[in-house]
Amino acid sequence: MEYSKIRTRFAPSPTGYMHVGNLRTALYAYLISKHEDGDFILRIEDTDQERYVEGAVDIINNTLKATGLIHDEGPDLGGDYGPYVQSERKGIYLQYAKELVDKGEAYYCFCDKDRLENLRKDLESKNETFRYDKHCLHLSKEEIQENIEKGIPYVIRQNNPVEGTTSFEDVIYGHISVDNSELEDMILIKSDGLPTYNFANVVDDHLMKITHVVRGSEYLSSSPKYNRLYDAFGWEVPVYVHCPPIMKDAHNKLSKRNGDASFQDLVAKGYLKEAVLNYIALLGWNPGGNEEIFSLEDLVKIFDYKNINKSPAIFDSQKLKWMNGEYIKRLPLDTFHDLALPYYEGILPKEMDSKKVSELMQTRVEVLSEIPEKIGFFAELPEYSIEIFLHKKMKTTIENSLENLTKILPALEALEPWNSDTISGLISEFVSKEGIKNGQIMWPIRSALSGLQSSPGGYLELADILGKDESISRIKIAINNLQSHL
Ligand code: GLU
Image (tube, rainbow, N blue to C red; front, side):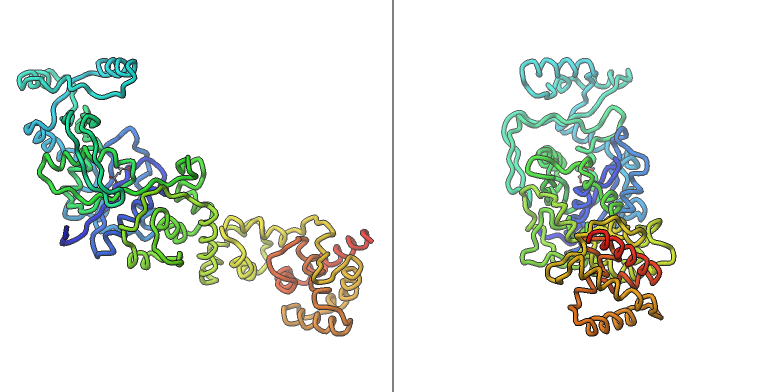
């Protein structure tokens, strides 16, 4: 089918945090439209008032803004097909439901809770799944009128056939056919007058001229019912793009409890928004080839929704970490420094040149939250085991470490000014004068300054960052420690 313009929508319910699955849906919907220069619409689906969470709309807006998934129409921007918040569209749905009633495709249902509960129990006792029994389907026009006038609460249900099959095409899942006997007479209008998602999504997608419906695969099984609605109205069915579930492993869905499921949690943990977006683009979609790092602009160019995979996508935290590390490495130093600063707070001594620490850290962390544990030794020399001085390749021993540190100490104490050039000059001189290997002085200094088996940066960077007084004091401590192990 040819469309004059592709229009997709992201239609979240404001129920709390932004699950990465939702963000992926938003991303795919965005990419599908933008790849063809189409429109991307934001619609807030808040008809389920019980699930409404205060502040959730802000989270949705902030997340879309932060990730660059900018919509063309939506609650804040308006557009030709508004309003874009379902509760503000309340007046629209009833007339459409009534149109279906007139066509015999829907009916009023006045069954109360007790009757439905008894029906449920009855079916359960026969090991059958609950299905409304069309009890109210045969009410006469007069009975319906009377009930409404009496103020008896009602819902409007879809009238699905019990025989035959309904089929439809999904771009990802292919041809899907279900027995009509499986189609529940789902509620279209609730007793509070608001539509269910099941009804509102069809009416709104039609009225908003949505050409491609992108959503999670949990809606796949309801889609035959939506199709029957489109057909009943005589409306064109949109292209369905149902996205595979995102799993933690082969058996478990990715849930909030994993701590990885929400965009905000990931950002709070020190993941970069761009990296998260890049990573989730690959959850169920394969660009082909080996390249995996894509900016949003790259994705817009290359995204082809026909390559979305229907098998569940596994959320691989290790891979996300790796990707985040790649993004961190590619940042301009100043940008990384700004992002890292909050993680230095309360750890790095005020007088320390934190920009130099950033230079070291940028290539050594995959997630920003790893920074504090990596820089603790700058603030305080850790207690260490003497093994950190021993390095096979560098040919260091306790004896020669002690000897070399003791010998170089006076020269270091006399060194002015204290900077990378003067320190490395002094070390070179020392190496040639003593006829030792570079490593035999560099490694002991590195060990003395860091107190770590492996440190971010070598002796020179550490000495430069720690400054003269602290470096000398740590070398003296090392000399004492080494002596006591002789
Ligand atoms: N409001 C639905 C949800 O948040 C959206 C489903 C759809 O995209 O149609 O799950």
